[in-house]
Length: 442
Image (cartoon, rainbow, N blue to C red; front, side, top):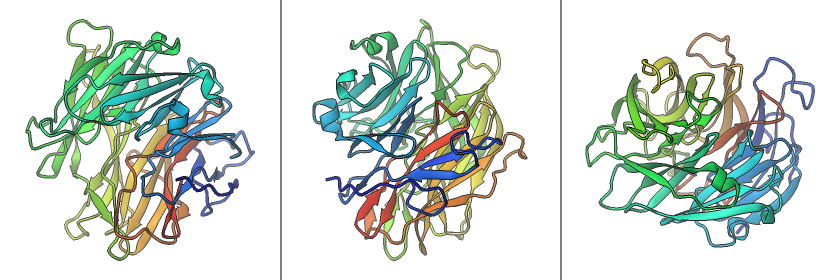
């Protein structure tokens, strides 16, 4: 059950602010005249259900989703709509809700699981997401064997692209990339899904795919191509590559191709990271919302400890810029431009990273942090396009939990960041923290 509390806008670090505005431009914030981090409380509840935070920032409204429901806010944090996802869709849905704002169409898109057997999809009929009667809804039954989990989507001019993991016994390490006709969806119709099953990088049945990241496509080598990424996640825990996919929805021969890109060595992130006492929380799901803009793919994901002396249940954030070089239409393969690691110190975990980049190449990160002696905090970091390669500016604390839930908990599956459609260079993130020992907030 949702337990709502009063909301307040804050304009300084360390207060209860988790829909966080990050201004990564050099110029002052167009809204408030100065460079600030600001935000507001979005959701509050005492149930054990993880948050799975998603956010889409349109021209006039901020759409916020969690596993509990959807809310619509003004930029100042005034809540205009709050309802359960079941009330919104009109039928029982499960979890893993994601949302996007399509700048070309000025429409909002949402996706989640109706159950582990089907996808639930919605698109607003206008640029105003408040009234559910102004939305079109549809569902697709899972077209392949195995339970459907961790769905995601990205948007192209003519297609909506989807991914999901297959988690049932008999299909380990498998996932799906798919697409549907965008115009049909915008008109309230239910087009067929064209589906491509994929397997783990290693090809070993014991390995598995944790997640397929759908890149937010700001520009494309072709209007029908979208990019995706996953990691090798080998059973040994030792990795040195990521796999890039390109799906051309208009191609009749080899529509889905991949390229394995060598990156700096990394260890698979642990399933859970350590908190004070005997508490621990999940951290390994990632690759949810990478970004492709101005020819480069920007990716952030959780990795394991970076030295053998650290606590085993320690995670760091690894990020990459990858020049796609017009692949797969060009004669060039993607190349690694730069990489970095958010490493706050020995035995301190950084996890559930979100990333976004503006049109000038300025990058914002937000993530959770904790350790055996630190409760979960929310932090952010930025890099300007002219900063030294592979470097970030010093991270800043946005919010510090004062306690932790007891025992072993599922924290979330992901968080999300979006650039403000009305204010270029202003980034909004949506993450979770604890208040007390029983209340989850975003």
